[in-house]
Image (cartoon, rainbow, N blue to C red):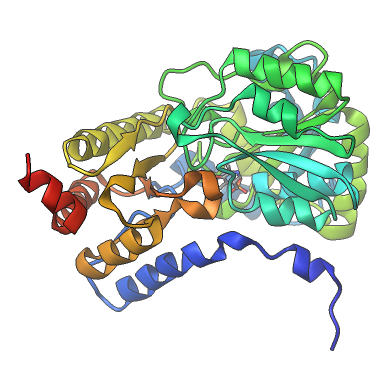
Amino acid sequence: MRYSSFVDRIGGEGAEAWLLHNEAIKRRKQGADVIVLSIGDPNFDTPAAITEAAISALRSGDSHYTDVLGYPELRQAIAAQYVARAGLPWNGDNVAVMVGTQGGLFAAALCLLDKGDEAIALEPTYVTYEATIQASGARLVRVPQRAENGFKPDLADIARAVTPRTRAIFFATPNNPTGVVLDRNVLEGIADIARKHDLWVVADEVYADLIFGAEHVSIASLPGMAERTVTVNSLSKSHAMTGWRIGWLAGPSALIAHIGKLNLAMTYGIPAFIQRAAIYALTHDIPEVATMRAAYRKRRDIVAQRLAQVPGLRCHLPEAGMFMMLDIRETGLSARDYAWGLFEKTGVSTLDATAFGKSAAGHLRLSFATDEESLGKACSRIAAYTMTLPAVAQKHDGR
Ligand SMILES: Cc1ncc(COP(=O)(O)O)c(C=O)c1O
């Protein structure tokens, strides 16, 4: 049977990197001594009070269809966050409740982009962006952020990538995999480009609650940007709720009306009890959010400290999130070969960061979504394995 051309557009180049992760999960299930540093799923449970809110919603019969854009109370609670944190003049009409940040990204791509358009994405790019953007028929134009520049964007590179076909700029701040937080100057530069060329900006802020000290700026809050920015976020990372699939898209009310039609055609809304849990999460103080952030920071410091001394390795210290980019280029191996060698010899699974684009070649993405003891063990294994590599061993001996 024949399929539409859509199915080709939703494929992506990054798929190969996940083979190692899948193999690690398989072997772990079989009882092998495997430490999984290849995925960003928090190892924390969802805070109990949030789970209780969902349970009590179910017990009280909150099991019917809801508004396709989300409960007004939830939309309002989400808008209130942007009012309080970013000074944006938003209310519930500026918010659509979506199936995670991912649902927001996909909806944004479908409602903003057409066949023949180009959408710029800052690279390293979160793996799903390629298929998400291409699903719309638009072409993904990657703008590399170089390792030599700490994976920070160069505004001139972004400006050069704009053509008459460009419609939007997509980025995540903080970024996955690099952990880079875009500072106000860079965001002002991107805003200038967007205003000058009349572009949309799609800002993925899913790690914004996991910043370790840097300032988080929502680009929507910069002058003239609220009308051209789509901000996507969720409770997945901040509240350890990846499996709940609850997120949102915030932007101009006209866009939200279009998203309403898309939701009607595709999801028909988000489960009621999950929305009740989200309302609870956003309208109560949840101390676990700060506790988890502190835990990720501590894990980052442990990994950085343990690996900084290892010849052949260089850590990029993330400013946020749950990942670290490890530069392994001095080992003489490609990230793919290093990752497979490390896994086969030591059971530590990492992700070849080339999955996020060529600018991440020679880097591994390590996840901190595991306990400190396992992380410490993984670092020892990484260090030992690296020292066995000929390029490192020779250089080390020759010192
Ligand atoms: C940058 C980025 N955007 C979006 C997502 C998807 O998040 P959600 O679970 O909210 O759909 C992820 C998940 O890892 C991510 O890293």
